[in-house]
Amino acid sequence: MQRFEFDKVVLELPDHLLDANLTKKMQSGQYEESEARAARMRVKKGSRVLELGGGVGYISSVCAQITDPANIVTVEANPNTLDVIRHNLDLNGASKAQLIHGAVVGRDADMDTVLFRVGRVFWGSSIADARSPSEDVVEVPAVSIADLFRAHRPNIVIIDIEGAEQHLFNRPWPQHVRQVIMEIHPKRYPASTIKDIVDCMSKSGLTYDPGCSRGALLAFRRVFKDPES
Image (cartoon, rainbow, N blue to C red; front, side, top):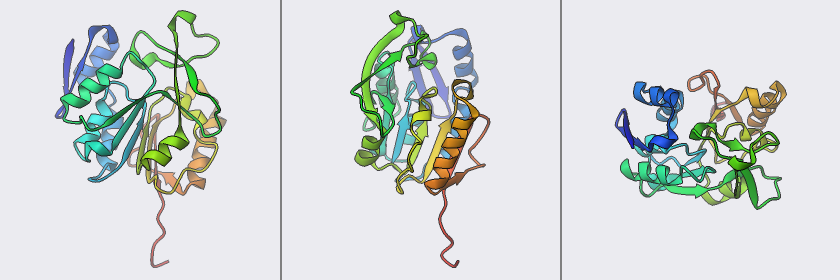
């Protein structure tokens, strides 16, 4: 077990989830640095946060420093990191945050389970495809984005699901979502998919947020009409 500290957030990770590159990022404070910065900029007291892709519990722990942990829901497909996420949430005073096991799917998906490839290092895991070695593939629950919206009515959605985000933007998002912070994965889909994501956000009343966006981290904020206009 190794212990890392990031501006009042403490993470403990078992050795088998780490490699040299990830350990270096953890030690230098570069691990999910942009996501943490964006969360600290946009999460407010009272915010309801939905995190898709819990990782090892870092971003949810950052959010729990600002809003009530009971307002936080994090979803993670990788069965090998669930105990780590729960441990780190508890370690950072976020025991009331809800952890859901499953792979997030779009509103039109009709499935109960999803095949998921578990990478040796947790951040290399993703939805399985034809190239995935069979010994690395497990079946996990499918969790509908529509069900998450209805059950939790988040104001802020934070997404890092290694390419599976491409399936979540075929319909406008609900009005209660005021902020989206998302890592996109251009190597996993064409530029037209990024356009579809941006177009969907625009149709949903959300516009590009330059303050949070950085590189592959793309953020959107809800547009509120000027009451005097």
